[in-house]
Length: 188
Image (tube, rainbow, N blue to C red; front, top):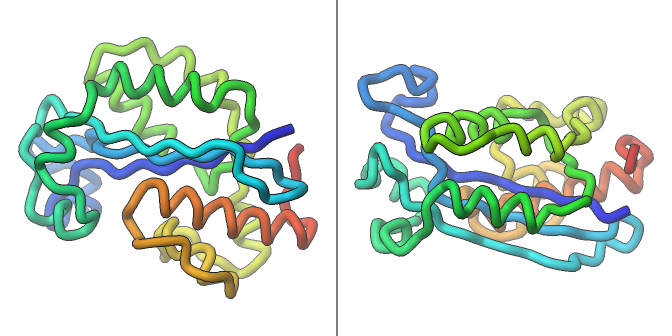
């Protein structure tokens, strides 16, 4: 069975993570989705996608998030609505089993569905395999690292710039495949 990995980038401001996005007007609006589908036995990537999303509540990106991700205003201005992007993501993922290092990105997707008035019931079809225990068994503290650094933490080559959704998804895939080879995570 094919497996899928995805990563999100979303709006942020200096200190918003520490405040848990509780500041006035702060919402974790998705601005980029990167995803890939692969065969876990061969590590062969079958398909990849990277989409930019136009935030509706905070359409102007903060200097902080531009500096962190390298995503410029023109990219999100040319992006699609969250509703359209969400549908494309679900169609892209199809029947692949999702391997995820926790559920934060699923929570962000649910928040964005609520913000955009999109039916979130299809999120249940994703049914992720939580790989967090496998990362913990390998000595990786997921709370203290970004997804983009996971491959390097396991001694693998960097997959691209951190905080690029597609490069982060590739880093997650490389790291998860390394754990798969060690028998720490499987296609469940």
